[in-house]
Length: 151
Figure 1: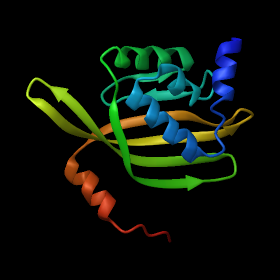
Figure 2 (figure 1 turned 90 degrees about the vertical axis):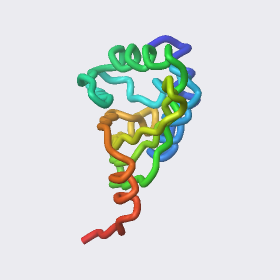
Figure 3 (figure 1 turned 30 degrees about the vertical axis):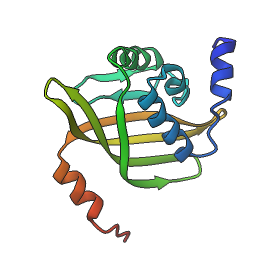
């Protein structure tokens, strides 16, 4: 790992999975590839699946995919209705993402359901999986309105 990359990651040490998730979505919204990649664990086993896309394995594949996405500009994605499961060393966040898309007809909204998995590493909390699938506005609204019951 280069010293620049190490310093960038050191500046983003996450004291919680929530902090890394907030940094991830901020990096999407500002098209900051370095900040986005600093949210990820620096391991070959990390995975990412974008809606309708293939499984991406490892840092370089994920970096390349986000770099291509940012070539079209920032990604206006906001997490909503997060459900969380957390242990001492891992956290699973299931979120609905509201995404603003610019089309020839103007601004449109799309909705995605995503699972973000975080692990506590020697560098702090880091993302190890982002898996997203398309959903509808209605499904997102129904899920956000449903009471959260733990049995």
